Image (tube, rainbow, N blue to C red; front, side, top):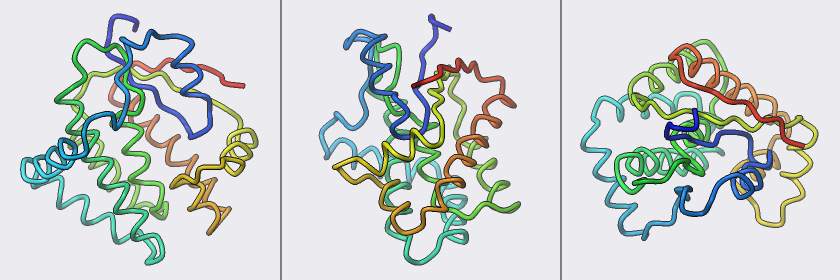
Amino acid sequence: MEDKKMELFGMPCSGKSTYLNATFAISEIAYADRLPLYYRLFGIIFEFFRSPGLIFLIIKTFKFIKLNNLFFHLIGIIRFYSRLNQLKGYLGNSRIQEEGLYQAMWGLFIGMKIEKKSLALAQQIFKKKLNDPRAVIYLSASKSTVYSREMAREKKTRLSVLLSRNPQKYSSCRSWMAYLLRLMRQQNRSIKIISSK
């Protein structure tokens, strides 16, 4: 696994950044959102036009989004397309990506209701664009630990905003992560699990 390109994956506040900084040299890490804004915006627009079939699937995700989570979902879409473009661009000689396409895909799905049709749609999106052989390091942490850390954060995140509206959403957020791990295993992705305190 060490010879492959890798992506860090896990719930927010699960200890990803701590693990990353303790395990890898800065030169080995491809950090998210460090490119100039204009470059990222250009990349997002480029991906929209390059993948028309994916756009159709992304539009279908709105069927499972409540009106009060609409803006939240749009941000998830933008981040997903940004990560998709970054995979084809600046990663260079880095060994591990701080926040990659798998994490962005989780962020795309977490506002969606979990039901048979939404899971099927998520699987379609997964198979449509995840043609990358990147290995995964999954940071596993308990529900209580991650939830308490998330809600104690001074800087609000998309997840903390979602949970402030509906605390019960946390279980579905973890379910989406478990579902993505299941899809990765079905596609024979290499997954290394690290238990985080």
